[in-house]
Amino acid sequence: MNRKHFLSAMLTAGAGIPALQTLAAIGENATGSKDAILPPYLQPGDIIGITCPAGYIQREELQPAIRIMESWGFNIRIGKTVGLRDNSFAGTDQQRLQDMQAMLNDPHIKAIMCGRGGYGSARIIDQLDFTTFRRAPKWIIGFSDITVLHCHISRHFGIASLHAKMCNSFPDDFNKAEPVVQETILSIRQALTGKKMQYNATPDVNNRAGIASGLLIGGNLSMIQSIAATDSEIDTNGKILFLEEVGEYPYSLDRMLGNLQRSHKLDRLAGLIIGGFNRIKPDDPGEEFGKTIYEMVLEKTKDFRYPICFNFPVGHQKNNYALKCGVMHTLRVDTNKVTLQE
Image (tube, rainbow, N blue to C red; front, top):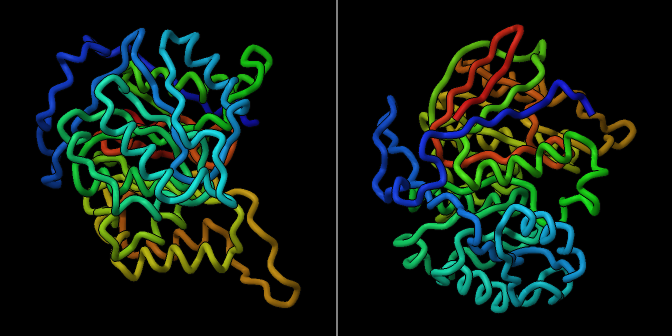
């Protein structure tokens, strides 16, 4: 793993004090978008709930995550969907809906970590009642399929959430894990306890230089494309958009990026971050698409001048750092350095 990808975190003055986390928006950025409503940062003794709104996971698979989060001083509550299975899902739609709803409504649970991704959140998102969650926000943690939740919450409530590794990504033995794995897991604790986050990415010759500030939004490309024209569709105007993907054919990536282009989701960005696009499937012989992810992205954004960086440390990969969705960040891209700072 390229050790030039790394994260640094700095203590915020007063970070972690719930009284400082008001439910009022902090202000407005240059685009008129309000800053995120921050759920209270976590304190020792707070409860993190684990539920599975998408794919199934066995109880024993949670143990590494539970051990590590308990070592951080948090208590863990395991949801009813853990261990359930309905084909690829963690129980039926109704079971997953009820478990997530219970987590959203429980006043003692301060953060909700999804057990894993897979597929399934979009099947229950319209039935979830966010009334209690809106009055008492809590951190929703996950990535991949959980992009649906991040986008929906951002669109309707302006509440920050955490795009991060889930329970199935925690190492069995933290002390023996690669440094980059340790760093990405620790970034979850740093984000949840109120650290100001800063990320550095290796410069890429395909990057487009510039500086941008805006709310950070995004996630998995196929999930974002799948919720277009739905009640969960994201608003990209004035935002820093980050994208990642795994296991797709090149033509499929181009099709999804083309959807963002044709629906004008790329027109008024503040900046664009391209994370890991991994395990791309080989073209069928004689049916080669012939374009790289660099070429696809630059083609779709050729009419715009906002900064773009590639190979950012987020996605279905080891260097998948925790990102606070819906929170103001500044992206700086130049030939020698790339930084994203909360």
